[in-house]
Structure formats: structure tokens, C-alpha cells
Length: 137
Length: 65
Image (cartoon, rainbow over all chains, first blue to last red; front, side, top):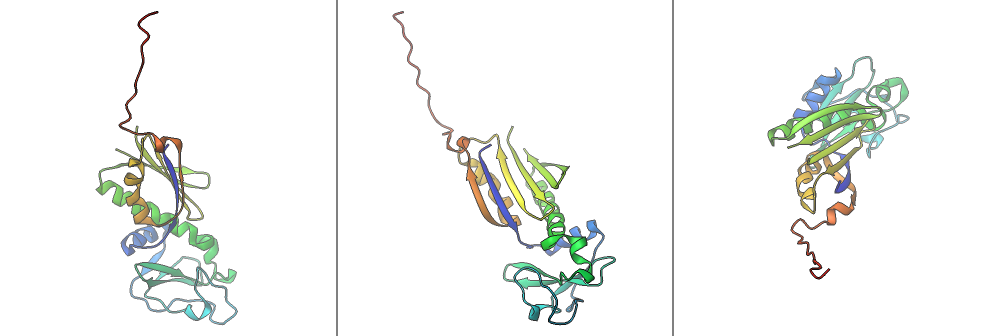
């Protein structure tokens, strides 16, 4: 090998996020300007957002069997995921801590699509704690 | 064989490893993936990275026994 890198995922493509939602069985609600959360100042928050940010969004994601919804907010050249991680909402159980499972599905969609456009052969494999994609020429 | 391996954990963390490349070309080949996904937070170069692809090897042959 010649180098190893780690990358923090940022949501840059709504199309790939929609595809990830479809794969996970979530409903992408384009243009929905509010998302369901606990509703008061005692709620816990996600990412770098504060409680005042909760409830407002540019699009939303409905997750089956969850009371709360995920808000998608445009943030410069990418989109932030905004959700109430309070346990009664059920979101953390479905999307993982810090929305890890949603980001994983998004990354897989994005890489599969773009790498194939560039002519790479992509092989996907399930690991114990994740997914492996191998790109070859 | 040249490969780029991406491990995406259930926590959403992405680890990219390039294999079979010699020299600095591995960074160039994997850059589009880093741009696609977000921002790089860590990078480690391995010994193969420092191999000069155009390096000449000189051999001295002992002709007199």
C-alpha cells in the first residue's frame, strides 16, 4: 500500500442522499420545511447544531417506526443533518450514533455511482462493522 | 494490481487505502474520492509512497573474479 487516509463524510449530493434513503427504507420529503422533534429546550441535539436550530429545515427524512424526523439544512457547499437524538424519538437506534448508518449508505451510493462513471470496477463486501468497497482498474 | 480500498464503518467513518501504487500517484488517484465524500482528517504515507517510479538501479559487475 502507499497511503492511508480518513475522511469525515459531508452530505454534498441530495441525489445520493435520496438513493441512500430509498435503500434504507426511509422517506425523503423534498421541500418539507419543518421536521418533528421533541419540541422543548430539554431535547438533545446532533452535530454542531443547537436547540434553536431544531424544527426548521430545507428538506426532511421520515424514518419508519420513529416519532421524530431528520431535517436537512443547506450549510455552505454541503448539507447538515439535524435531528433530535432523544431516545423517545427512536432515531438514534435506526440511523446510528451521529447518523453513522445514514452516512454509510450515502457514501456507498455516492462512491458506487461516481467511481463507475470514471471507469472503475467496484466490488462491495460486508464487514463485521461496516462495508468495504474495492475500486480497481 | 492497483486498487483503492474504502472501509466505511457503521459509525460513518471512511478509511481509504491505496494498494499497488508506487510513488505519489496514489494521492492523485484517490483525491476524487476524498473530494466526493467530505474532508480529509488524517493521512499516513507508507514506505511505498517514497519509491521513485523512475528510479534507475546501477549494478556493478565484478569481471575479474
